[in-house]
Image (cartoon, rainbow, N blue to C red; front, side, top):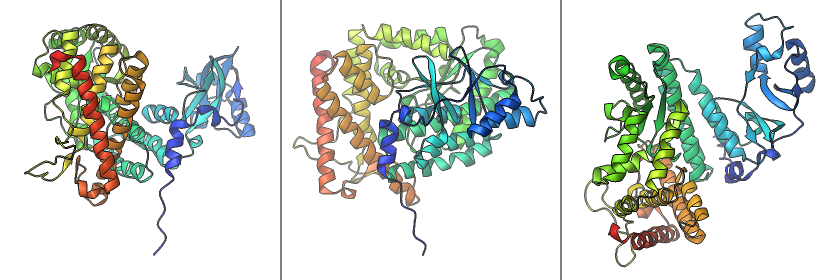
Length: 485
């Protein structure tokens, strides 16, 4: 039997997060002015043995061209090679800062289906990095998987491509990638699928009659998705939207996208919190009214909706629509102490599964008898705590780890308590991902229900410690907002 390939070292995955981009820049940037003839640029790329050239004049970055541009925009189009390179360039390209991390570059490439990113230092070009510079091959596959998504021209092609996401998560788990990086990578692929479905929908239905922002909510919004995820999304429409003239278009577009996501394995939200539901496909002014009502009248349903729709992130369309909404909502929510107290009370409904002796309390009866629900009794309580801290601080962060770190910086919670919560979150999330990977490897559907006998005594001890940390922080927050009780 041939020797099986070994998973890559966990260090390679960790390095994506800890390695600064400047260590990936191998040479000075190859730059040319905008009026350089295409033929001369091609000769420069050949002589310098590079796959791209940056277009710079007077120290200002105008754009870039790649070998793919030469093939598709020049050779295939029969363009005169005496024409200036600015005519075939990608203008105002996305860039990354020299002090950013390799993981940020990976996500930028995966989300936007690009393979070349100029590196900037204090507004000036410092170099170029490509997908091949991200030497960890398995994580880099997220870039190629996203690229494969954007090449698909049918929903059937997207369904076939999306089947590779489970293998990607299994490989990430085998390499002991952090839950934080895994969530970002899996969410980036979901973003790509969503964006491509919207593009295909517009090809089928025609251009959108008014501007819109497709918004991810829930775990996708927080960049915390796993292979076991349903849909949470919505549409924020420009206030020029008129139901009589535009309603049918957006009903068809949102149905096309949500049906496509379901076919790709992202099942319909059981609570129908999706853009294809009329209630969650509204103009900006209506969304303002929604949030104002939820904040002013925080009944149980309003709190449930708040927990979903406060975790919003832009995916496709006109970003300013969501940015405007979030800025207004965050400004309003941070000063509403009664609303925050209700949010705390809602957060306390998800209790870690520890009995009064500090031992694990397992589910009794039913399909999941003898298991622990790692998501709803372990991870969700931390998500809820982080959301309250973010709202109290007026923080725009959506990811749970980012929210907790911002809360520490703002003084909403001590740095020590944040470290404890982050350790608990990473441990519980990693257990969940590894459990899902084992089930998928065995041919079963991923779920969130872990049997403690799958763990060593050492691991069970850490599990109890993680639950105890969460329980302790819940008590602290309850004391701070006594009306939450």
